[in-house]
Image 1: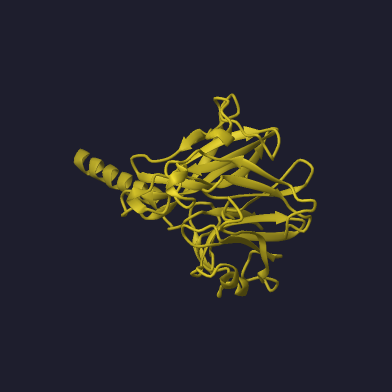
Image 2 (image 1 turned 60 degrees about the vertical axis):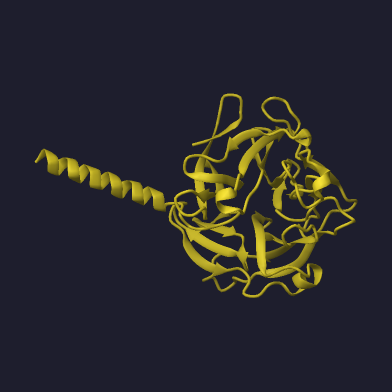
Amino acid sequence: MVRLILFITIILGFVARQANAQIDQIIVHDPVAIEHDGRYYLYNTGEGIASWVSDDLKNWDFLGKVFNEPPEWAKKRVPKFNGNIWAPDVIFHNGIYYLYYSISSFASNRSCIGVATNVTLNPDDDDYKWEDHGAVVQSVPGRDNWNAIDPNLAIDENNQPWMAFGSFWGGLKIVRLSSDLLSPAEPQEWYTIAKRDRDKRLGEADPGNGAIEAPFIFKKDGYYYLFVSFDLCCRGSNSTYNVRVGRSEKITGPYYDRDGVSMLEGGGTYIVGPNDDFYGMGHNSAYHFNGNDYFFCHAYDKNDRGRPKLVTKILDWDSEGWPTIH
């Protein structure tokens, strides 16, 4: 009888572990999320931008693509674009859902950030339709020492919209947007918010040990927290992605880490990265849902050939106001 009880306990424990393991097992890159009518919608890098829906932030159902065909302008602006749309961001503002996305190709900063809008996120709604508005910003090789990918929209204390973005090159930028969120505001305001030193002999497209990308700004208790990803993504078992953070009382910075090092000088307090389960973890987003702060990212699974999996964690805060991951 004791052996039977022990056996049942082991089996139940195994089942529970398997159930927990399945919670975040969808394959994604660069996840972002939003709540709409009591449900959660998630978008990620993919052909046409992949979309998902969940009732509990644990079990996700695939909804399909945002775009059945890439925007017509994309190939004209970025000739090497292959149809794989990168790093979306989604925000609700003044009654409209805005979905930003990246049009680019590897190792090039000939890139654009585009945007589409919708009045609902529910594909079953009669009013569901994504309307594309084209490029918001564009980077051009030889002209710009920055890369127009990885957008993140944030609204400051004056209800002014800003877009943080960037990957590699001269670091991460932020630009003030017009009130309709479709273009830079005039007169234009651009700032560098984070960067790392790198060996310039390697060329503009090779960051060496200076890789930085994927800004995400989260406002809490009077601070703007800037999350960024260091090191290398998209390499399966060779990925070294990790998330860092700094904070500022102004959305435009300067941002400093816990030790007082500026993120313009390579600073950034370590949050999460490679561990026993994942080769690397990064390109995060953060939200306040239903009374809790949440941290989303993708991670390269050591137990599944380094494939990128969704990871969702509770985002907690220590006594000095710095984020920690549970």
